[in-house]
Amino acid sequence: MSVLSMVLPALALPCAFALTRGRQIYKHSIVSEHGIEECIYVPLGGIKQYIQIRGQDVRNPIILFLHGGPGNPTSCLSYHYQKGLEQDYTIVNWDQRGCGRTYYESHGKDSPVSTQQILSDLDGLVDYLRARFDQPRIILLGYSWGTVPGVLYAKLHPEKLVCYLSVCQCVHILSGAVLAAKNTADDARAHGDLACAESLEKEIEKFMHSDTQFSKRGFFAYASLRDATCAYRKNRSCKPLSAYFRTGLLSPDCHLRDLRWKLRQILLGHAYFAHESPLIEYLSMEFDLRRLPPDFRVPVYFLCADDDRICPADMIEGYFRRVSAPQKRLLRIPDQAHTVFFDRPEVFCSSVKELLGEAH
Image (cartoon, rainbow, N blue to C red):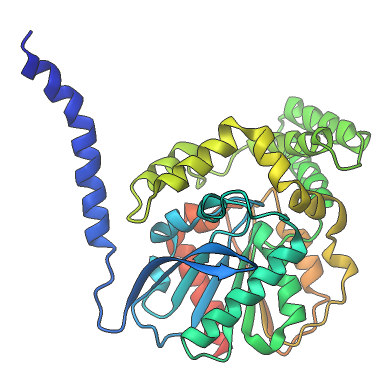
């Protein structure tokens, strides 16, 4: 066998990857006269933090996207889920303190990673965007964990916001896990899957009798219940985990730091847990939206997925009925799950535009 015949197959995969990624970069480049396409670090709370800014016209309203997790930035996936919004909005994705590119840029100086610090950083970022783009108010969009600082900030600083748009709002994460599991067990029983129903009921019982104090053990008990719930009749619209990696690798903005962070989450779970534990503790043990006053001084819009088994739509709608705001609306997307923004980006973008159309 010649050297050439051995080398060519070894080069085929990286060459195909480079060509595919090159096409993605070309396809998603913003070249309009007033467009913007930036990946930059800005000083927030004493450290440099990463933001990505994209849009066809900087004069458009600004949407600041708060990612889920805690500690699960999605900026390198944004080309996939927000393209349908970039014509009408300038969209900012932010790797929050303690994760993603911000984590590596800060060289370990990103502590404390607390909810109050996230809110302080968020306020600094909002002020930066308002000043830079000469807009007195911006649109705040929170997804999953991002709805926690999102809803708190909407109450603290309504004067800086056009509106608050919630996607898969966290109400009370542990009660939501139990409700989703019970609903799923009922669904399984109704479809004759008694084994699954009984298995889920045992998981619920085990979770209810576990140590409810925050700990690794308590967190993994919650994760076990959540995963068992999501595994049953997994929504066919949900893309597999491999699709996330493939989409991220082919991203026009994919960076080694994005890959390092994902590998840290997967391979060094203990280190990830230790670093994010103050946020996970707050989400698991302290945050209960039902205990906060339901009045807002800005328009609020809620987008939820009917088949969400992490932040159940029924729980979100129950809270939403109590909300008092200058303007409010809830939109439920049928046959979709928690990651609707990734699984069905066209539905996500059209739903966001429909809701935001009422804010202008």
